[in-house]
Image (cartoon, one colour):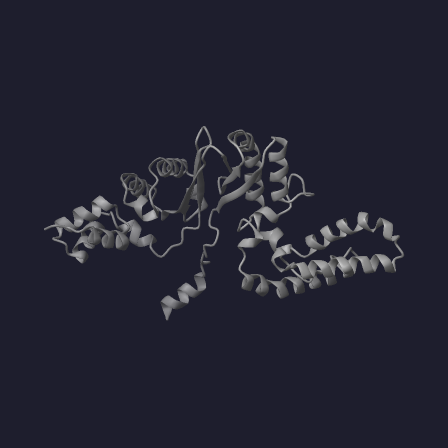
Length: 350
């Protein structure tokens, strides 16, 4: 009988067997799903998959491929159950090969990759290794003549970043490529989750404000106990909250304090900008933690990443701004259940 793609997809989802194996099983079993599942199990094809279906793959490695001319870059994360398998040479080669295939053939999504010709090879290699292994995610960035693109993979192959900037000219774009690798290294270490504070949802910022300020107050109690310098407690946590009215009030407060201190008014213009900058730094803790462009640049913490990009482009005689980045860290966001042997025994005896 004729076997439909939907049937193959259903059997593959149930057994984790390869696409061609599923098709063959359905043909042999006249389209009967249960008989096809048994057919695969009898031949050992579905056995490992069924055994691993409830297990969590949260270890693994990342991969990266960058074009020689920096016009295109692909990254991928492939998960395994154990770090032991992640250290296996066969698994490491599988990650490299899979990332290269994604770079070359550009599947639309993970499902398309799994259904591709290489997806069959991937599934066969997974069966050989004998552990739950899966492609979790991948991304590709492309750059035109006036865009700079680069990436970085950490030495442990568990963190990978690609990043792109829009430039004023092809000359500036080419010159910015090495600098973007440094920004990618910064991104790897500092773990931003978004490009700019402008990407935050106002409700999210509001919900984070009270808790973060209270946490800082508690930290100051401990610092005081240890007789260490306490941190400034902010009223805000994001540039999103620093409206014109807030900034005007901050400047007025600074000037009032200078007046109380009997500082000559003629030198205020030399003092106020620095204190305004300090006010912004103290009141944008969320931005510095999560927004790439608003973080203090690790190679020059007097600058934000955004300012460092501007300076780097200016040195080349042009302009540039980062428009996109993608950062993967192995297992990030995956909840890995801890084994509870006592609970397991109790459940079986109950």
